[in-house]
Image: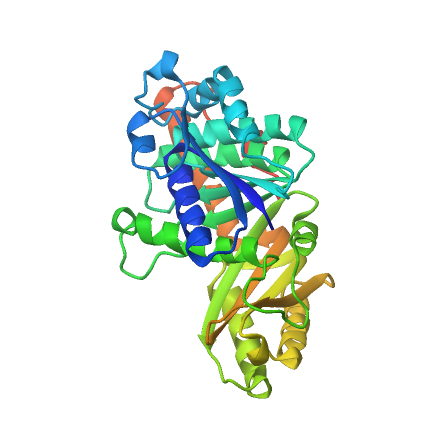
Length: 359
């Protein structure tokens, strides 16, 4: 699916850079434009992307300091410059726009939902959010910011693909030291999804195209992406169990939003050499996925590659229940209550109306 990527804030810029690099290194051609937008000049200087600095008048290139209301304000004030840069990258070949942001920081959490809303007014393309939730051990301000931002992003975007920062962190890996590794894992998984309709390594029996990704994400709401891979035989008939077991691992231990149990729609993409992909395995895996997430709408297909391993990508759209998301929302509510108590203001922080009822 040919997509334009717009990274907002520090995390958004870094993930956009990692996604663009992954796509270029593999020659997929799915990323047709990319841009990083931030209020902190130092965060933009290290990125191998075109960039736009916002908030010069308000913060003079020093960032908004976690203040997501200020993040919204600087995006609003410098919107014309941002939209001008996006317009030059959103050509006729683009099929979707992804606004990428860490939802805990100030510029990303405040600026990304506002930008999504403006893009919806201008472009006749799906506009998706790729939102990164803060980990459990990040500060309370990040939890509150993410709760506020997520509520707005879900309302404005055609769908919001969520990544829990803890989901793809390796055991024993600290959050600080693991940021780069987490970004690479996001890039590999999301990059493969975007590339699924851009087959460059041969023709599969039933190749996934961009319309199937778009249909899986339709109807707004939360989406999540799972991934797993395994060694495979050169004989497709011997890979029935490889396909089914890899799909199960992608759902049960490889989701970007773990512990998702119910969704409205699903898409299964099996990547590998065409002669190694078992059609029987794909059909069995699809049937299992329908039962596992309680939906009758599961699409499936191939993504031909030269890799000797088989990989399963599972995209779930319209997520109706996730224990992990419920846990995050409770942390955000608790952090907001503590913020209110410290400020001694009855109307400060995050009320139930701003964070409850997301699903």
